[in-house]
Picture (tube, each protein chain N blue to C red):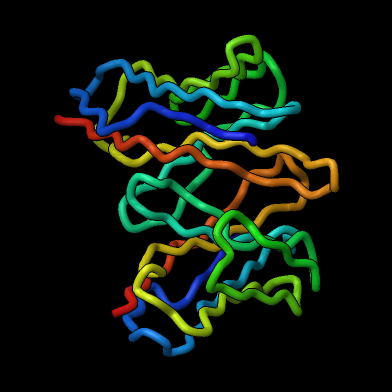
Length: 113
Length: 115
């Protein structure tokens, strides 16, 4: 089954404790991206990647890191999480053409205390 | 910059009522337009798309027409069901001059359908 898999689904952590949210897709997609969803703000892009070893900042990259060493994986790293990073995070992928739709994972709800 | 504006919710309808969710966009070029649906506890799923002016996207009884003259992509359904209760997102994607591209989402409209 074609899918984008994120782990974990729920994560509660404390300020400053490094964490990684994993994302993997099995569709051989070129493009991958991370979003955060906050009430009243919709989806905001954190980082995206057009291909392996090619990543770029989205609209809200501060406090986040990503890497794309393999085509299928695109982990999101929070080196020193803060409470304002409490949010619902989504990974998404697409074929790599601007008119290709995004395929989303089921989300990771992160709480930073 | 590019943007997507959609009507604020929540929208509450009775079963079998007609649905319209308004979406307008601003873009410098010729974007592709999408509607996504998000059911509780899940990620967004593509509902329909249109890639050029006057295209009509349709799926599961929903439809939307790409109107370049009014920069709009309103979502409609003739008869909603309780199972249509979800959050609906309008989005666009456009190629940048650098060769990259970006997806921009509206803030979402929550639909609640009552039996």
